[in-house]
Image 1 (cartoon, helix red, strand yellow):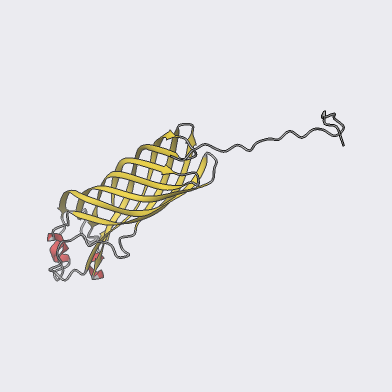
Image 2: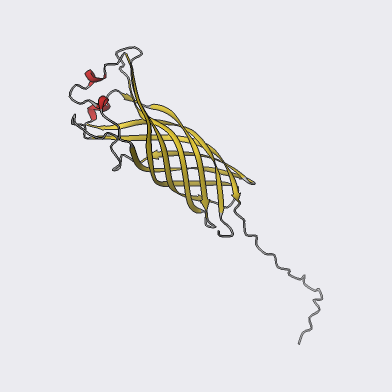
Amino acid sequence: MPAMAQLSVGVRAGYGAFGVDFEPPSLNGNQVNLYEPNFGIVGIFNNENNFGVQLEVNYAVKGWREVDEDIPESEYKHEITYLEVPFMTHFELGKRNLRVFGLFGPYIAFKQDDKATSKNYDAVMKNPQFNPYIQTVRDIDFGNKVGGGIRYNIGHVSVFADVRYDLQIAGGQNIFKKHPDKIQTSRLKELSGSVGLVFNIRNQKVVEEKEYYVPKEGMDTGIEDF
């Protein structure tokens, strides 16, 4: 391991706004944000240039939510629970205790649970030609995440806060196994934030500049002139 590398492990927890990007767009008419928590463990490795990787294992609930404004207290909610494993590039700016960092990289997610609930909401009648409410969700999902945040080092402990965006819309995975009802796309979307605490197993050392002794003018240095 490089002499100035930093290795940290810890935990993170956050909250996100989730949804599904459907095609044709008519399927998105009644959709609103689904707010769900996510949490997990995190490991961060940075080399001497503040460039490295960040690996996580997270419990995350995603999906979508719809409401009918014409019917009081109407709601359709589809929640999909995943065990999500992001593997991201992690880079930091600065050498001091307070730093700005960026994240980018892929993730893979394994479905753990899938449930839909409805209250005073006739889902099928809202879109009689296209029916996303009876489709089977894939067991594995994948995509890319991009984000950034701040990190503060306090000795052997660091705290951080970040925001993330799911880039599935740019060529990601459809969550449905089949599209028999003319549904062209069904991609998860996410905007989330989290805070975390990590323990620095190996701290990043700062190279101190050496101070050289400069004799004062007129001082006898003990060196004879030739």
